[in-house]
Length: 296
Image (cartoon, rainbow, N blue to C red; front, side, top):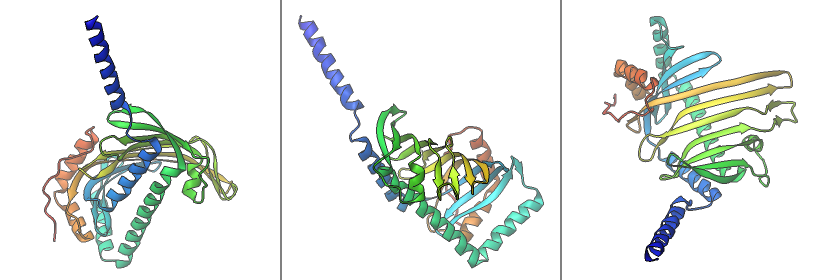
């Protein structure tokens, strides 16, 4: 009898400990609010990185090397459809970059576009806590998994919010850092603009975003897939199928100019291309930080 009682006590304590460990610390909606706060707060203090980007669309595949600078990112085209650029194409790419560095108007245009993209990302993130209703759906590889669907009580005052009203999906949150690790969504209902006269995003589209932790505080996009059917002016329906893969993240000094970023792209070009080839063969998209000389 003592043995049975002792066993019962042990099982009860173990069950309680398991329940405590499996319970999430806050509600699903509160967790999303904390995640968005972390994303916005850490993004404002982000580091600067060098990495490669492989973009695939209906027009083919393009691979670029990119460096983030204080004046926005600067990128150089390296491969087209998996093939190296011809000597003539390399010269044209280098001329394009040098011409950009000599044109204040072009620099201002690119920085303005970059700032607009950053503002749009922030605007979308701020919508997430209220645009959807969230529900815990278990844990997976160190992440909380949350299902989401449109919040019927949230009014759509922007284009982004209207798209959200036709969307549902799944959100993964890193348990330790409370950062966005993965996001998958699908368009469940047609989204019309101008009562369908200006355009429509057709139901059935979907997207997938995967992020990776590049440092103690920085998370970077590792892959992005977007598959949408869009109809414009009730005349033409076209598919927007794009995918983007990033890797080889190496921290670079903050405060670099565009000229310094270009010089860094030109530095150790062969070594970087070898690293790109290795990463594209199936590595996890992260490289150990290396000491990089900052061109002056």
